[in-house]
Amino acid sequence: MTKRRKFLKGVTALSGLSLSGCGWRLAKVRANSTNKGSRDQLYIYTWAQYTDPELLQSFTNQFGVKVLADVYDSNDVMLAKLQAGGGGTYSAIYPSDYMVQKMVDLGLLAEIKRDRLTGFDNLFPQFQNPSYDPNNRYSIPFNWGTTGLLYNSEILNPPPEDWDYLWQNQKQLSKRMTLLNDVREVMGSALKMLGYSFNSKNESEIKQAYEKLKSLKSAIAAFDTDAWRNQILAGDLILAMCYSADGVKMNQENPKLKYVTPRSGSSLWTDTIVIPKTAPNIDGAYAWINFLLQPKVAAQISERLSISTPNRAGFEQLPKSLQNNATLFPSESVLEKCERATPLGQFEEVYERYWTQLTSG
Image 1 (tube, rainbow, N blue to C red):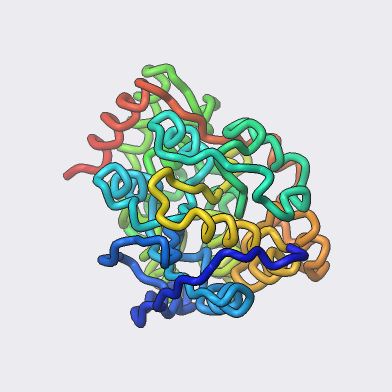
Image 2 (cartoon, one colour):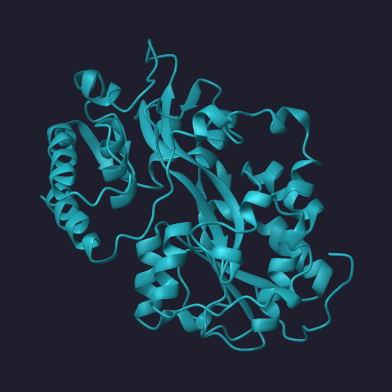
């Protein structure tokens, strides 16, 4: 952004609570909100690893307004809160690509006004007209990556190369591995292993994936999206299904922890920023998006938080070591075997039914 957008006169207070995980602390980033939104405040609802006090303070320094972030650990948790009426607090939310489509269908999102954006052209071309949101009518990309396996290379030798490793080494991994608490990711991984589409709408294929996962369940320590980080650092776990952004952070904490995108393919995801129709501070939301589109800010976020920026101008400012990091920026040969999760419509009920059977009890 070359010009500071004039809009903000409201002031918010940063919460004094904190979260910890993966060895980093997210002071002043809260797990739950009890405050009601207003036009004088800027609240965002995001993933835990996507913000930190430095980012919030940088925005405050540039615009003179403080922002408070609440965090969630799954798209379903976020959507449930919005549908229960809790979305009126937030002016910017970070759903994943497939969830953007679902939220649009549910009438939850405001259309992005392109003339209010500064820096949109900084994005890589492939992020300027994504299949999940043509012409970025409702969302702006923030981070992207793959889903794969993080493993302790000192213990697991040979290392995992594909999803079937979990079944082939079930005894060694028993109660020392976790899978994500995410129906699409977990069912999708089993589908890819079986040679099916990540987005299969064939109930016979879904059932086969469920049966494979059911045979593995006794060896799974938990279906978990966040708590596994400290456990794998402590050595209680030796393998965890995770997002590539977490894989980078964990490797920085302990170089013996390695990340791999399974050979048969996985999910390719983009997490985005959207403005809910109930946003109490529309001006603040656009200022936040434009702030994040600045190349310098995008590069700083990518380097400090170890996330894959979709901002080409920001990418060009990264150190070569990060530009060449295959976990952050996978090769085309890896990406061509991955699929984006797409909305399933009414067939989602089939996934949910098998997921409930798998995770209950």
